[in-house]
Length: 143
Image (cartoon, rainbow, N blue to C red):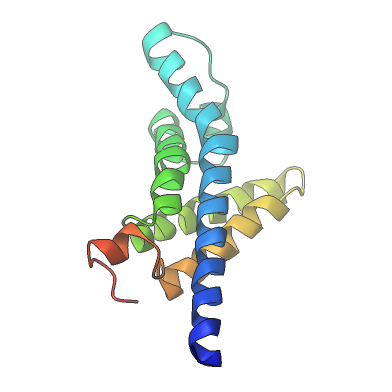
């Protein structure tokens, strides 16, 4: 095994760790709470404050867009971790995190985590999911 092929294996493993770790964190530390609150709001008539935050940013149909954010963070985070439709999901996460950064910049200046998810998603968007992904297994991404 040559040096370059070993580097490639380490690079691919590092890409796997980055994608899986950030996807799981996004899905279960941020998206799960939102998707649960969305479910409880729609089916149990519980109060959910996130659409008010979305409305304060000037979005029309705040419940719809809050639901989109919840789905992108939870389902998108799982797909991102699995490496399935990775570039499409990364593009949605980039849009989502761009709005989150804007929201934090105008309110409480705690934009670091959203910026980190944005940068990771941008990298995966341009780079692809890598060798160890379902995209590669199903041959939907050639990188």
